[in-house]
Image (cartoon, rainbow, N blue to C red; front, top):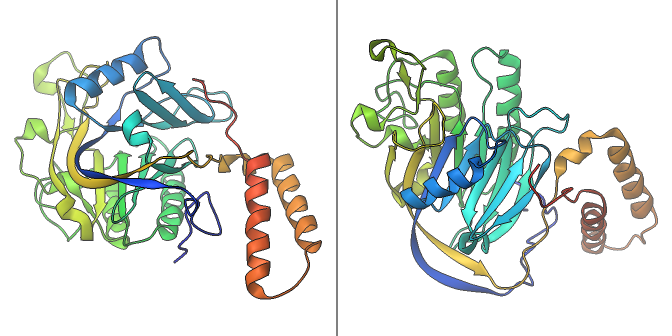
Length: 345
């Protein structure tokens, strides 16, 4: 496994950063499909609900902001990854308290469906992937593409760190324990994409945490179909929070909150975690937008610069060559892969 942080090839970007331990924290981590934050007042509404429900980290699905970046709002930090074609569709994000944002190692926007945030913890780090899967009317190829991307990200993370994968997966795993990944407290009937989700979780030694906590059904469903007649309303569990099995005991509770108000047909899934954080006392390492490599001009410039600079380096021992290569990559990221803006798109 690659031990380097994603977005920082070649080693630990915090090697020269001073850190101080914080006491063990009871964190409330949630995921919520908000339908959109691309409307007046919706972000403020989300933060208001975070305060009401005492949520420290809120993963957002279907955010609908463009491009990627960061935004500071009072005592909160918003990080987001959206489309680059001008369409206000899809999109993922994370809103967290500024206190927790001080522990960010790296923020990596990957696509309009996936982002990664890596936090400095003690004794282990915390990696959070926020995802938004295609809806059932979208072709299976898009679902496969999303899982391939998440698999690639997971394969670069350390298994001895806390890995949390959460979001709207548009999948139903159903009621009843079917493996070490899916517990007995799911909801309803499984569908084909539920099989895909279970396979993904099993492959990476994850548990689907909200299927392991017994709750009334009204605290299990995460989505309901709109209907004028109560008897025709369909309730499903399609949003999930997963955590690697070895750290399952750090998750002490999980439930949904049907009363949360943001004009969405989804309920937030909120988990309680016992996690010890570290605060980065000096500057946070810069974030990088890897999606810029999809632009052919940028990709060509990166490849050409990398080749030219590497060819110009003096060949010595392997360690010297690796150190030189790491410096070249870091300079390329600083010069060509910085997120475009720090404001709402």
